[in-house]
Length: 259
Image (cartoon, rainbow, N blue to C red; front, side, top):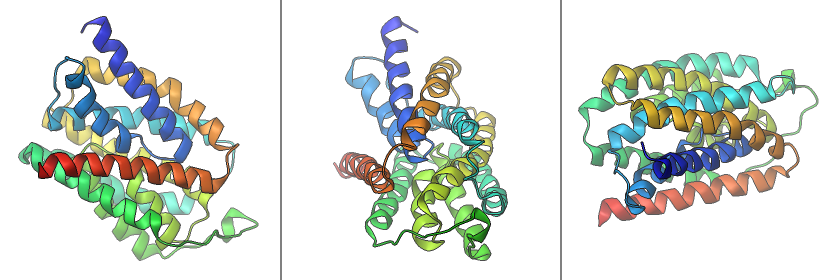
């Protein structure tokens, strides 16, 4: 690996992981298209959709781990929600990640585009901030939480994501979880999901060692910074940032698939 490629991958990992910690996502929503398009645009090797999904899976594992570690003392993680959704999403992500080896690159990119499109639509739906005094007062519909987590895990596992970019709007709008509890809990849930995705991609042989290592180092450094900054921003700003990121990635992927 050349120094130029190393720096390019590091910057992709750093920017994506900072945004990951900022808005409570695993970073794949922005890093998947960045890894797919930026290296070849700069004259470097073009990674396949399978390789990008493998690198993304490993990176998301460490990015979400770093984010959860940074939030561990804030008492914003809804543990019961994490248990229900986490147990369902890890099964789905493992199945999706390993099964992705049998899919073409166009199918993998299409799955990503569909997930991102759904997320964009859901983020534009009207929502009301839920008020609460104690996190134990925050309830949720358990069957909906389990079923949605499994489906998200299955689809996101295919693209090496942890599913937070679709999980966050589901938690906000469908399950009606308060924004800051959603951001913290989604990191914990997607960390669990990333375990299944990483194991599945390793089993499928889609993980490239050194690009993954570079992305991981960048993630461990950047994700906690994003998490710290998120505590100082208005929740509407956080949701706006998430929506813009998802919308931009969705337009790019669909444009390439159609043309």
